[in-house]
Length: 287
Image (cartoon, rainbow, N blue to C red):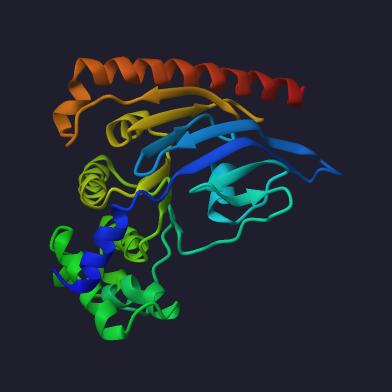
């Protein structure tokens, strides 16, 4: 293991990454349309926890992620990261290397090789010399399914699943306190998604970062996460928090276990109840 890789692993075990979302309120266009996206939304995410957030479309999942990422401000409440203010009414959040987002549509630079994409953040931030960054990049690529063999390939030569794996490594190499994943596997077929679940869990088990994961797939949420949070229809708040007490490492047999099916039924009931409310409200609004 290189010195840089040892530093990454040591920092990952330091206990950082505790998020505290306290009574967050978000209104878009307050003096016009006045769309209330979040209302009194509170959530504690311990350091190293893998949390999956589900709920009907428009419930505020992405709004909450954007606030955590520093892409959007809040109207009320506050967010703390490791007991320090991340976002308040008077302190607009800003993007930072301590919170890295992986989007569903992908964001690799097509003109850069896999290795160049992975180490890009380290070099732009001047966090280490290029040779050391490349060593760390190759170390991570090798440790995650032998991706070092494609280090000199370009994104256009890779499958969508392979590209997504590279994006997650590009996020991880910056040693963030939190990984924010916005439905990263939504467009994938079942086989590709299953493969990506295994790779993501391998990365999580090895580096144990705090993960905030948005999805519409309840099987995916329960299979991956330590905690599944169901949000209400707009304005979004926390309806249900499920502690996923399934043993790790997770295997495909986990999905057929009695406990998995129990947890899924609880989540399905909560999501369907909120989806019905959203549908009925939409009918009234269109009437």
